[in-house]
Image 1: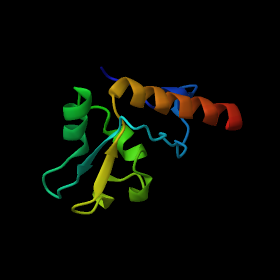
Image 2: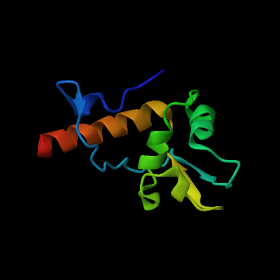
Image 3: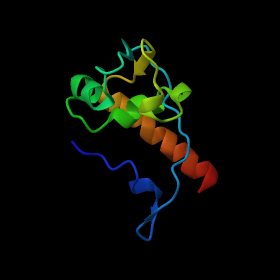
Image 4: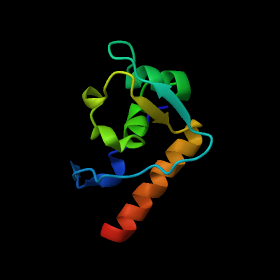
Length: 103
């Protein structure tokens, strides 16, 4: 299932800059150790979400890396928001809160 994370930030066909959002922690979330040269967000997304398109959820859940997969150091522990439906809903709730506060 493809999900356009930019859809909520488009005005007249132009995408506004993405705000920094948070995905709240839940005790169902998973963790994984990042192995440089082996681990990739699309592969983690495939493994935990059954599709390769939602690595951005993992990146948002790990703000210490500044939103870039290339900033993740070897042996870093990543939080995987889980299960997928919950992760997506937490993301969308964060988007709703942002839009309510900032338009």
